[in-house]
Image (cartoon, rainbow, N blue to C red):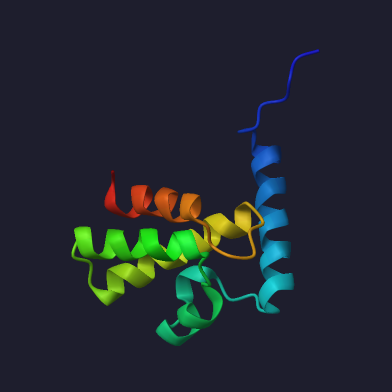
Length: 103
């Protein structure tokens, strides 16, 4: 029996809907992660201990501004929602850094 394509439109739609439901349950808000204010980022982008250490290293190595730091956290929060992680973990940060910094 052939396996279904994980990147099919219907599978992606389902995954996004699950992530939005997870986010809604987590925050009780429909506001997209990309539109969070700095205060909201601080409140909603909680990191695991390992992710915190890794993010600090990324911040220092790439000499990020606070704006750049927050942008990575917003992307990482979305990735964490897709993976249904309550806390942002190191893998979520690594993926977000790859997207934001093109590495």
